[in-house]
Length: 253
Image (cartoon, rainbow, N blue to C red; front, side):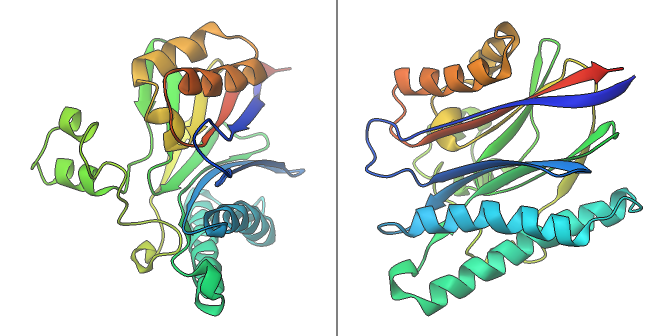
């Protein structure tokens, strides 16, 4: 049986921000589907500009450089380069316009090629991609925050990192030199009934992983699920913009 994707998406301003610096997009091309969530940062409208450019550039680069004959390693390199290209263009914009100085954005994305049984996953910053399979939730991306770096150095525990004062301080994001040659790109084998959540930290910072899993398992419609989990984050006190893309893997004849 072939696989296909059902996708729902939502982005909320929230109750504490004047503008929405998150950008989300689902691009469906004849041979692939690209899902992206970006959470911008910077003064005034700069964060909005950075996140919007990120979700425009990455699909453009994937469409330009990917072809159906490419294997996994070549595809991973194209995904990586598309994110590096977004970083370079965002940094160039910031250098040319004083109002955009120091702007940046997180990004997480998934790439599915039509007819494939795998998903390519990549991220930069502290937006996240989760996989829900059965009664298990797994975070597929790594936060590029100082708190997470302290966890990896075994200075603090993962539990301590969740409330650490540096949990939202990023050391790697689009708009920074630290991007280097780009992020790790994971290959995730797909099964029917898998669900994936791409989200900004306005959601993951307010809704615990176990609650995310329960919510995504209970709601059958993916658009209702995306709308509902963003509202749940708002109801539970998120003080940030809140964005989510929910992907459901289905079997088709």
